[in-house]
Amino acid sequence: MLKNISKYILISLFFAVLVIFLKDKALAKEINQPENQILKIAPIILDLNLENEKKQEYKIKIENLLDAPLGVKLSLETLNASDEITGMQFGLPEENSPLLSWITMSKNEFIIQERNSETITIIVNVPKNTKKGSYYGILFATPYFTKPLDKLSPTVVSRIGTLLLANIGKPYKEKASKMALVEELKLENALNNSVNKNLIVRVKNTYPYHLSVKPFIEISSIFGKEPKIEFEDKRVLPDKIRKWSKTLKLKTGIYQVKAAISLKGGEYIYAKKTFVVFPIKEFTIILIISICLALAFILRKRLKKAIFILFKGK
Image (cartoon, rainbow, N blue to C red; front, side, top):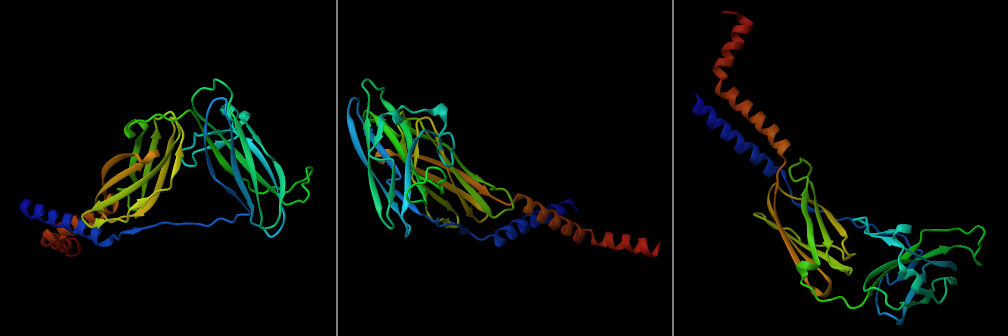
């Protein structure tokens, strides 16, 4: 009897796994949503390679995308890189950067005619004996719909900005493994019933200068390779972490995830992990049902006799 029960339990286990595999489908999901713009600024990120006691000039172009004149006001603000997803928070007084005091602008308030652009010059004058390293700020362009600018009651809409990432002195050459490290490579919901599996990559900058970081991901299993994932390029400030994530749909199986992280200057760091994708809750329910059916089949004669006695008596 025990031998038969063991055999049927193994058959039930195989059946439960088979149902899970036949149920799954592998799809990759990516959603892009366009945004409406009335103002455009270029570049979005401005790398400033500065030197002590040297005045340097940089150009920023601001474009009016409307069919009407648009007022623009420029302002400089500090930034803090404490948020892993957006990477930066603005206007925090505790992060006052001396960079802002070194900058003057050719103009900070003007009108741009319809479908036209304005180029402004920012002048950076680094004081003597400034410590080598990285300094940060942001230049915001805030649009107004009034002409001329009404300082008493302007109509303000969403502002856009240019990140100002400055290095004093040339960054020294270092091995990629000492410039950054992969803090985390994770596949969330791998054992949940949900078909959506969230791939997460977190990279920390261990270099004293900011880095341009871009992860490339390869995922493979016995079913073959998934489409290669190329994440967006992000700037990571010294001793800070940035996070990338993507929602995927994967079949039940064992997956090997390889991450190649591109750093500044064409250097790479690598990470590799293996994940098991398996809907454990659904599998458990199917397994229990299968075992119950198997036991009912094995003990069918006893069950039939018990039911007969229950309803008919001896």
